[in-house]
Image (tube, rainbow, N blue to C red; front, side):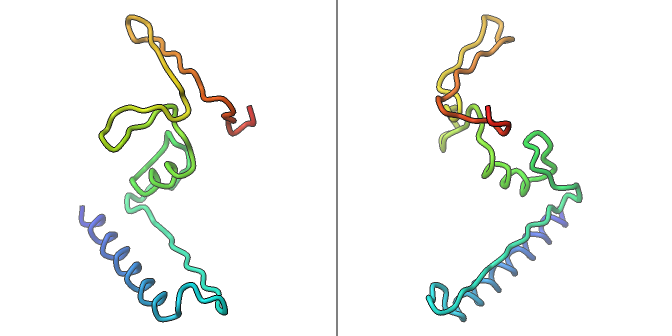
Length: 111
């Protein structure tokens, strides 16, 4: 818990310094280019991964959520909604599920 709190304080400090630097050097100036790079370290000490199944901490989950789509997702009211699937059904015992995919979806292997 202490590590998480320390991480939040460091992240907030970095964010504040970036905000000051951006306001000082005039963001949006056509004459000068400015690049801001932000690195996020996971405080849990595990190796970061983009494998959706192997997420050691919250920060990695945020990255993965920006890269991959799911069959289903939740809306702001935590109701299940379609994402890659357009519809789905299951057998009587809910041991077999069938998902119908949106047209034009390609997987990482191109299929």
